[in-house]
Each structure stands twice: as C-alpha cells, then as structure tokens.
Length: 210
Image (cartoon, rainbow, N blue to C red; front, side):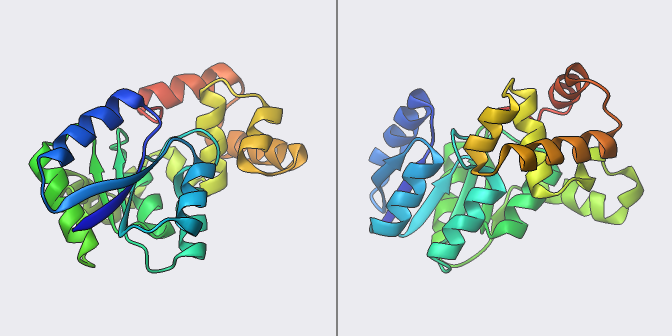
C-alpha cells in the first residue's frame, strides 16, 4: 500500500484525484494539504510514503518548498503534479529534490504509473517534458530568458505576475521586504522588464501561472 500526502489547493482537483485513487487498491490518500505550511506540518508529523505536490500553492511553494521538505525528510519521494509544462520549471523541481514530474492533463493511468515508480525509488518524467529538457540542454542559446533567474527570483516573478505586492511576497516567502525588493530589481534587470505590465504579459505568454 502506497500512502500519499496529497498537496493541492483546489478542492475540485483533490476530489477528482480521490475518486481515481478510490478505485486503486494499492494507493491511498492518508492526509491532505492546501498550502505550504500544511505540507511542512504533515512532513514533520505525518506517516506517509510519498508526497504528491502541486508546484503552485499558497504560502511557501515551488522549488523552495521542495527544498524545505527534503531538509526535514531527505529520503521522502516527491512527485510533482502541476499545470506547469515549462521545461525550466520542471528542471528547477528536479534540482530542488523532486523524484518525478507529471502534468495535470495526463491520463489517470500515467499518474498511477508515476506514483508507483516514484514510490519505488525510481525517477519519473513525462516523455514530452523529457524531450523538451533534452532540447534545452542541446541548444542552450535557445533557452527562454527566465531560465537565467535564480529559484527565488523566479518565485518572485510568478508572484508579481499574480498581482502580489512586495509586502505580501515577503510574507509568503518568509523574507524581508528589502530582500523581496532586491529580488524584484534583479529579475527585472535580467529580463529587461521596465514595468509590472511587462512581467504579467511575459508570464501569460509563457504559461508560468497556474
């Protein structure tokens, strides 16, 4: 029996996934989380075999959350289930410590396969995403501009595009307002942005928002 911590902030998605797992004898959801703080609480105190994690949730999220989870339970398998299909987002997840990555538009059979593989100590990535990542490695000159950002700068970019202010970003990422402002300044310089509108337009164009 594979016991899951399902981290997903959308109730409809959680309900659909639980229906899938209800028909699967060897997989059971034993706890749920709707934000980063709840994930970390369950990681510290819960008993489960695999964390199935959405990359974008309220509070600490993304690569930062993966890193914090690994700091608590180094050997915990993490499978990312996300709307993001950007190869750079996928790469950040694996570098932070994820063991697998699958998108939410995948067939249920693929998700079950990914869960079993990652729970068994193996790696899993959707073949389409793997092909794109290989292309990025082979042709680095064609990488998208946001690939040059640090994990924290990328998080700030996404939050700014979602309409968050500096104070809110600082609180969510548990950093000072000054640090959040510095990350914003650095990412705008690297990306050549001159306005918040440019950030929003870029994030929409490259499907960085979930």
